[in-house]
Amino acid sequence: MRPAAIALAVLLLCTGEPSALSVWPAERALVDAYFADWNAAAARGPEAQDEFFSRTQDPEIIRSGCEPLRRSVFLEPQPGTLQVDPGWLPPGQRTHPSGRVFGIAVLASQVGEFATDSNQIGMKHVVIRNGRSYGFAPCTR
Image 1 (cartoon, rainbow, N blue to C red):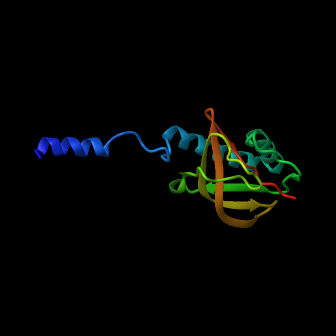
Image 2 (image 1 turned 30 degrees about the vertical axis):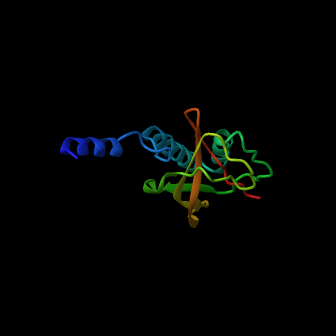
Image 3 (image 1 turned 45 degrees about the vertical axis):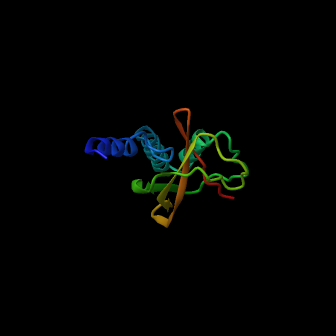
């Protein structure tokens, strides 16, 4: 095979569009904005954070039986862990949310009146649909 033909074959095999599981820059920006807004609400207190959850809760998921937060919850997402998670189902749900679902590792800090009450590491999910990010709010009972 001639060198030009080999180069063409390699070029054709190694280029193209990213796979369906790639995170696009616009999607990353929406996820980043979601967490920035989450933490801005947390800084204003539990009532503001509950309002944020109501406003950004995925409309396909009913959040019922939840008590208002008593403490703010701050999230520190780990950007290198952001990934598409097409198989994830919200707890208690049987259907996948429409849109693209992303999972990201976070450090969650529950903050009381004077100090941090607890820290946990976990996975948080965000769905992007029609150019908007939605979350799955925690529910305290």
